[in-house]
Length: 64
Image 1 (cartoon, rainbow, N blue to C red):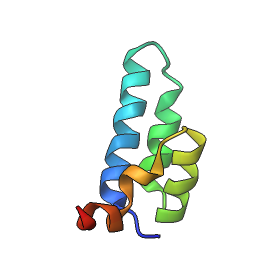
Image 2: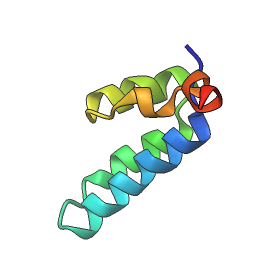
Image 3: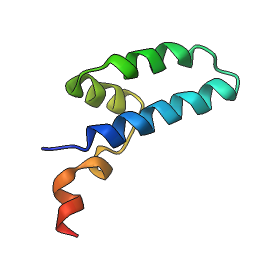
Image 4: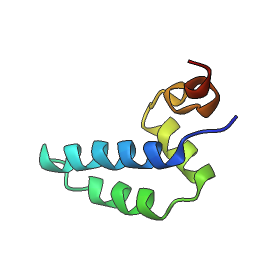
């Protein structure tokens, strides 16, 4: 499966920034991890954070 990793990375970072500003400063650790993660690591992080990876499938984007 092919994913839009740029969009996934940005959405994960936004989620962490939101958590930081809502009183969870430990999210800075996740933000750093996301910034330097490989594509496969991004998938693992997204699953851990309960992201719906189907929203990032490239094949679905181009079929519409």
